[in-house]
Each structure stands twice: as structure tokens, then as C-alpha cells.
Length: 162
Image (cartoon, rainbow, N blue to C red; front, side):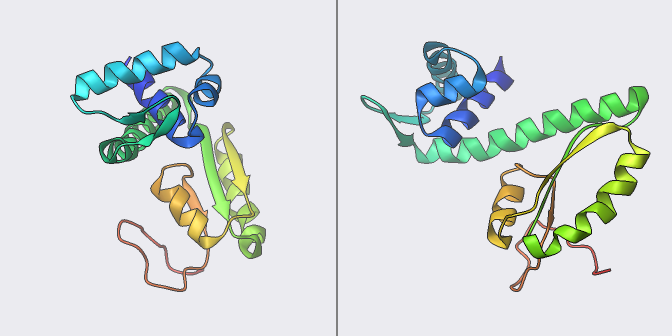
């Protein structure tokens, strides 16, 4: 149940609306609200500013959403690793690139897909460098191909240029 509660909280943070978040999770709005309320009780902190409608996350809620994204990404990676142990690499590899680097993507995905026939690749090739960094930090993509004119933000690894 804990993972489901985290999924609901992440959906609410993304959608900024209870009904849309519930729809994206394929549950009723009362079920989503109750699951988040139980998470608040478990963590002993309010996560949502409530009124007649969604008014945003509390500062604690914002911090927990970051943790939730990380935890859910780790859970998915664990499932993928167990699947790989059973019969080869599988799952979804999410790659984003800036438009001018999109021609390099097939050079990476072609050999990857040839070696891992159970894996799938999703490519987004119309993002800015800033959006790629944001999505990497939010665990929304796995790989980003971009030019970074400024200093590399902490926590990122950049391979040498080819």
C-alpha cells in the first residue's frame, strides 16, 4: 500500500488537481484522497494544503514528493533487475535529447535494442537542456543528451565527448 500512496502523491503533485490525479491512477477521487490522508497519518505531517479544492503541497509535501519519485524509480529499477536476472534485460529506457542532438539517439538505441530484445525505448527529442536536467532530477527520464554550457549540476555524471 505504501508504494500506491506514493504514486498517488506524485500524481497529485503532477496534476495539481484531485480528480485528474485520481483519473491518471485509475482510482476514484475519494480513494486517492484517503490514501494520501493515511500517508499523512503514517508520516505524521500534513502534505497537502486543503481548502475547497487543491491548494498545493506543503513544504513537507514538496520534499516528500522528491523522495517518492526516487523511491518509485528505485522500485522500478529493482523490478527490472529481477526481470533481467530471470531472462534478459527488460523494461522501459526513457531517453530525452535536445533537437540538435536527436540524430545521435539511434546510434545508442540501435545497439541497445539489438542486445536487449525485451527492453523498450521511449525517446523524447524536443526538450531544452533545462527541461532535460529537470526531468533527470525528477526521475522522469533515465538518460539525457544535451549540451550543458554552464557548470554540471551536482549529482550528475557526464561521460567524455565522443
